Length: 185
Image 1 (cartoon, rainbow, N blue to C red):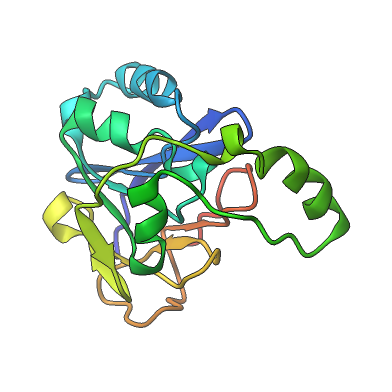
Image 2 (cartoon, rainbow, N blue to C red):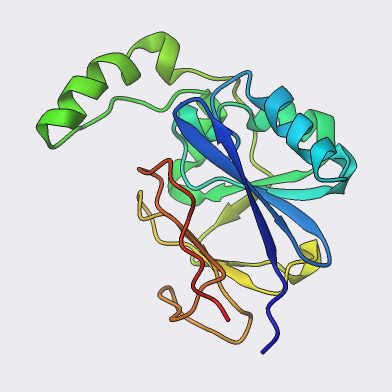
């Protein structure tokens, strides 16, 4: 199978967004509030315009992943998709209380759990994901089987079914800032 999906990481403060281009263009995550200008600059740098973005898929409803979604939707006209279990977070514009399990998480939670760091502009999601989101109508040959919570997001070839496709184009771990693993091909 010929896989020509182009995945462009957009480094943001302590996280990343991803621009995915195939026959169409989508984004994964939007960064903290105020990240939209960096993302739009990257679009321009790669020869795309804001109107090219047809969908913004959020891995989850924390401020570092959903914080600029409302602004980007306004500037691009793209639909925003989020898992049904995180819909209330984006509707309220608040990630809620964090529940860290390890020492590093507890230390970081002191900063990221503060009201300023956990709030972002609220919005109504356009698409609620239950099990998977078919991406063909947005110009991406694939699907996003979504497992909630915090297990990340995979963009898989259309013919791969189920939540754990074997050869994803893209696999994003929401806890890492690193470039995702490219396993397709």
